Amino acid sequence: IKLREEPLNSPTSKLLKRTMDILISGLFLCTMYPFVLLFVGIGNKITGNEGPLYFRQARTGYNGKVFKIYKFRSMKVNKEADRIQATKDDPRKTPFGDFLRKSSIDELPQFINVFLGNMSVIGPRPHMEYHTEVYRSLIGDYMVRHLVKPGITGWAQTNGCRGETKTVEEMANRVEHDIWYIENWSPILDIEIFFKTIWQVMPGRDKQAY
Picture 1 (cartoon, rainbow, N blue to C red):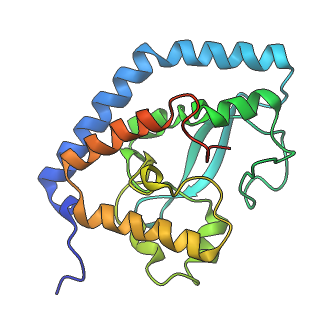
Picture 2 (tube, rainbow, N blue to C red):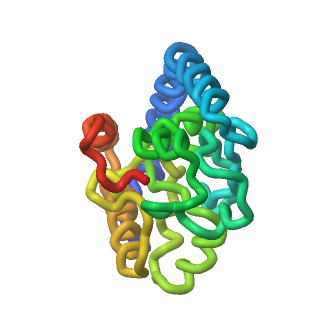
């Protein structure tokens, strides 16, 4: 008995998706990423941002396993980083970090996660462990979103479900989009999401990135 269609259960589909992940992440890391790294390093130095260049945080991944996600640091070192989402006027953000978040540059180190194999370019966004524990008891199908590898971007994010989730209903809507992606995955869908994301992060278009 199958409760839902899961196209990525196919070994062929898994191999295809992993091959594309390696090619895309490897190409990006070997070409553009060194320049991004240099830009962020200089930006942090000029603006006096303190703390390590990279921010590493435990997130829930494939099959509920925990992994460390990489991001460029955009906030001051704080004790609430693993529990509280960033808000529009979050006092924890640094001025340069605010720019990194609004431009989504802070997410680019996740191509390292993709290359290592604990993330995919496209998939449900990985949530903090704390949020997984909270929402799994509030939203019935919440853990279904972990049946595929988490992604740098996903169907939910290209359909308006991005940024802070202020209510359970907002999170449930995001989960609904994630499950739709799992049940309707195809290489064409991944390509569509990839290009929608590029369009979405163009300057001045994304009002939910903060």
